[in-house]
Image 1: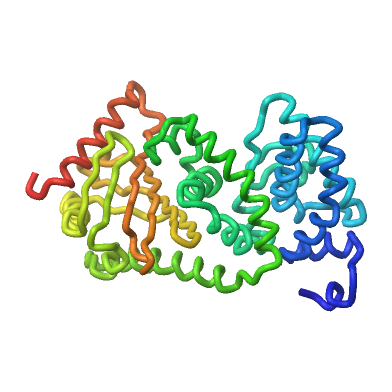
Image 2 (image 1 turned 45 degrees about the vertical axis):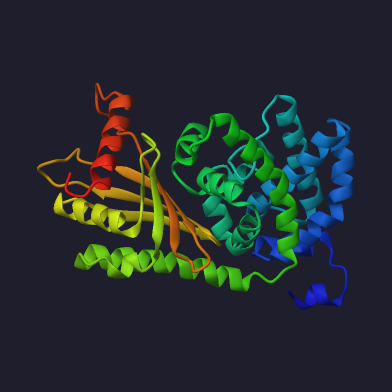
Length: 341
């Protein structure tokens, strides 16, 4: 926190400048200062409960957009512009605006940014992930998949989580309602320790995989895996349990000449989302689908106790029936689950 805020109440423009530079507490203070007036504005357009949700949505969008605010002097009007866009969107029946690219008319300068780019560029990533970590595990998983992975459609998330699409929608809606309050709570709390934890978790996964891919030895990678790990393939719902079968799967892939390259890793306490590109052998270029999204759920010792694999469908292959792709992925999972098959 800066000396400006320590002396006394800071003008809105100063809070806006600090927030744009990544000061989470400044953004929290700014929003709390104007929450009442924003709610009163929302009540002119929406019923009470919807108005409350619209105010939370406004805050969530402001997190993403504050770095592109052109005129800090106009921050209050900017917040009300976002709120009006949120209310109009709700009146049209669109409710899922969590951290996504919706409502670009509120501040077009940020229209081209992805949520993760905007968050990272503001140095607010630790704050956001601290708030996400306060959600329940099911809400954390859908939030991380929706906003920090390539498998972000409702259908893909439903497949990964093994629940109906309607459940995904309701969980995201619940996450949106809770995340606003959690972000405000996290704004005034120290989150440096959480930031260090998240970065350490990301590096640990990255280093273990890099060592395995470089040397072919999986001991360092398996050190991050619980003995009773449960692995589930979203396609086909196949499940295997135990580190021995998991080790067999790694060895079978290596024997088949299949490798993979991590493309992104996002971690919050208890949940890691890993995306990777499969590298198939030249003699069998379609052995594995090209991409995988993995959900790693950690135990108290930060070892993976549950892992969910989702394989992407290949694009651009004529005549490739999606059902065939899913069947192939399920068959591969079955083969890896049975030593010697």
